[in-house]
Length: 153
Image (spheres, rainbow, N blue to C red):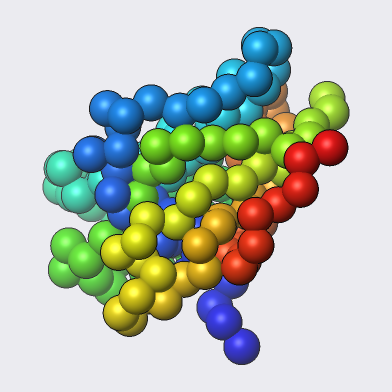
């Protein structure tokens, strides 16, 4: 069984390069807000590695990941990050597509970089994420890689 945090962790990796590339969004403000929340969440690991001394406790790192992820995923990311030595497992998506959303939940996808479809990660070509609203912000509470492009409504 695949570790459920692995796709999320992987989805944060190539962030610095991807941040400058931007993202694709629909016309409405909510869609833009959701896409930006995904990009922000997936940039948190790189933020940590730029200055790990800022997060001198498990709790500080966990709180950092809670800015973009559910409690469960933030805990898994915290454990993963604290056991690594600079080995990032996530990337910032350069393109985000929102499939559907309502007031409190959203479903989106973005492509997996080719570097992550081979080698130790061996992810499928597309990453799906589900978000929900928590305290007036969007957080990712589920992520999974898949082989086929999701259908848009």
